[in-house]
Length: 205
Image 1 (tube, rainbow, N blue to C red):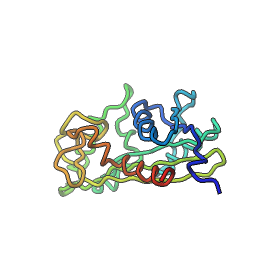
Image 2 (image 1 turned 180 degrees about the horizontal axis):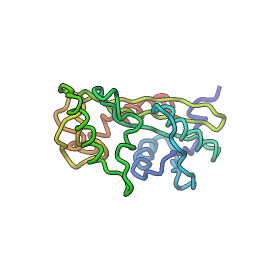
Image 3 (image 1 turned 30 degrees about the vertical axis):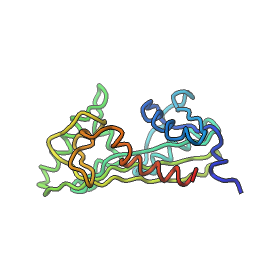
């Protein structure tokens, strides 16, 4: 029986146009002799994310890329769930930041805080960052690796590291936000790190 490692081969397509994410994954897979190529390099369009869950959106991106190129493709979908907001913004995390001039995460974080105040939600405002990785093969099969980092939302915003909602999220067991945390430390404990550990264990372990 062919192992997952053999099915991946020497080249893995990462279905993202985000250079930072691509570099992160390339560094992670370097020890395993896998060359990583990005969706942008392959001239792939970004498919519309019409799913209502992280896994659905990750599947859309991974399968579209695998089908278009004939390569195994890895994709992720991630976001923040705030319990007092019925787990919003969730899969719509990036959408909350969209403006006619690009993404504005300060606006998105302010909206999150204002809704919590509006609902008179008691603190601590429990929340989690989620990341779901999907590895899709050209034959239509796939493997799913979910990652989670529990924590809480705080206000006001703190720190200028990281991106997205990092300045209002304090991970469990810490008293600093992701926005105040050293990037490398965050990368060791984050929701993405959790999902990637499962991916590496499942495919290269």
